[in-house]
Length: 549
Image (tube, rainbow, N blue to C red):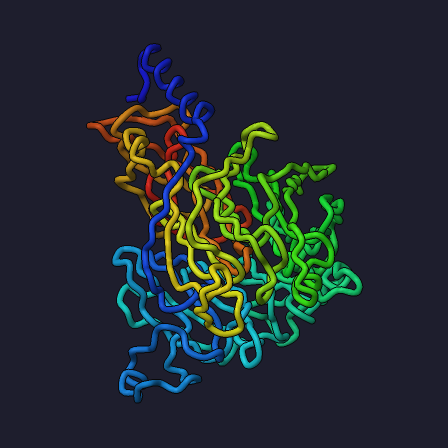
């Protein structure tokens, strides 16, 4: 039975759509903050959500004690107090969402300012770092108990030292690792040989002369044609990584500054849509700093406002052009998270200065909601602030229930708990609940009851989803799948959302049923674990894990 059979019901449903999608006031778009842990053990510098509903968080090795020690036998019997440089101080934890607890993990080499990605089976591959960790790859295989831990690979070391590099999962389940300090090349995890790398002149050409490298943590996105979009400083290209062929050079981004580390803007690929067979790709880049901000802040302690603009570019267009728009204010070091609704949340960061040790001031405590479908000039909403500054070395991750897990902030070489409100090492972990989690939306919030083949959904296949809604089912019904990213330094690597095609909705015994069509191939959606959200009139369900294969 179709869900609407009468004109009156259709009219009522349409009014609900209008109210939710277009008529929400700024007050209705406000969310709330919740302190989860007073002491998360470490200050999160890198993080990734696992399909086991846990979050890996870690900082750096070799810089003294954290606030949590390992509990394995080698350390549980260690003398107290532990030596300052003892390896029994843990610098990685696994946060359990359900129990709101952390479990210490064991890292050996230094993962400071490293990168990572998640393979199709959910295994986290972490690459590079500093010093003894510069060419190391580390493996974390999620488990249902508490036995899994980091393992350093003895067979797949990086060819080059990768410090401040970026990763992207590829259609063939390899990982490409792009750039890094003094590394003007890219290579792969699951190398075909010891010479499986390519030099990339673009990474050398986009450094501003006379400055320290300012195109680190380049923005990398897998486009719908299987090629890589790479952005450095304020320039961008499209390359065929299989042949190292330059395919396109895009116009230089306007706006008056640099966008990558240490200027540290952020980027996101806007959600892909079944309506154009996932072919249209639009990249959005926000924030950064004017030229020279790092040296002014780091050497002269002169703190200048960051950039206050964003740019959107359709990289699959025949004539791509940057469309610029103003943000509510200057911002750098912000994380850009794709919400279950397809909206974008900008969270964390500062107004003035640069990324680096003690190089930024004026924390931006308010998240900003960005609604891509709204008219230009009406897309940003300033949200209620946190009380905790999240500056250099902060992280943000979307959780299955739609909250944003926020942690970290440590602009110090070591842990420092001085009174300076935005310069101290931050151990508190909090969550931001966006507006769609407000109780007033409960009547239209879907609840997923069943997903067919969720453990292995073949490309281009159809699979059933059953869900309930307490109130009215909207005509604006969307089914979004989300690939959680590896997050560090305001870069969410491999973040991806797709809106799937669906059959007409049927209803039986109070349960709605629909058949969705999986993405056509691993170019549109690299194989792996995704969160499926049913979005009813702009209000999403809790996410349900599925695996595309």
